Structures are given as structure tokens and as C-alpha cells.
Image (tube, rainbow, N blue to C red):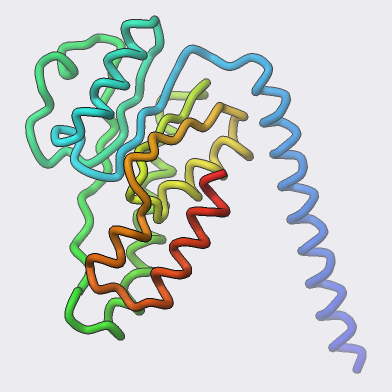
Length: 195
């Protein structure tokens, strides 16, 4: 019985420390948000070379005097107008493998693993290059982009999050044959993290 109370106490202390650490991070991010640098992260969880909207955002921000970190996959050539722009730096994310489409059970197992892997790669790419004043991202894909960007801006440096709502991610999932329960979860995910 005493061991159970000791374990419960240790868990409660760990939770208390986690809440305290997250609170301190959030307070620091709020403090930093009052002095936002002119550095923007333009994020597309897709091929940068085939994302004219995001390249246009990056070019426009650079022309306004921002230093721009353009984050995404580099699967095709980056146009010269972006590649030659001194204020724009490309931060490549490793291109992931495609999720299985035929076997729904395999999809359900593989999707969370892929989301975690993409989350870590995306967070690493966004944090490169120092503090940001703006994080501008394209949706879809919303998983994991919305959550990673929201948590980054909320806890890391207080930068402003701007979402280019090109489409809803859950509607794209419906067309790929994803199981209905995952589509409903994705819809709720976009509602929560996209606010």
C-alpha cells in the first residue's frame, strides 16, 4: 500500500513539474511576442517547387524586408526567383514514404507513426534559423502541421501563426479512402488546432 502511494506521489510531482515547465515556456513566449523579429517561417508540408502560393508568400515577405525560412520537401527544382533571393533560406524536410492505401488496418497503424516522424522533422526545420515573428503555413496537410506550428508559436517564441487555408485536410482524407473514424478525428483536429 505504501509503494502505491509513493508511486502516485511521484506521478503527481512529475505532472506538477510538467505543468510548471509548460507555464514558464508559455510566459516566456508571451514576453517574446511583444518584440517579434522580422523573420518568417513559410511552411509547406509538400514539395516547395510545386507550391507556387507558398513561394509567392516567401518572395512577398522577403520583398517587405523579412528574412524567410522556407520549410518543406525539396523534390523538384526551386525556381531561380526564390533560389537567388538572398533573404530566403530553404530548410528541407526529408520526404516521407507514402502511407498504405489498400489495407485499412495497416493504414491505422502506419498513420500515427508517420505523423510523429513528420512532426519531429517539421519542428526541427522550423526551429532552425532563430526566432520567428511569423509562422505562415499551408493547409492541407493539417496533420501534423497545424499542431506543430501552433505548439511552436505558443510555447517556443510567441510568433504569430498565419494559416493559408487552401483546403481542409479531412476532406482530402475522405477522397483517399481513409477509414471514417480517422476522417472524423482529422476534422476535430483541424477545428481544435486551426483556431
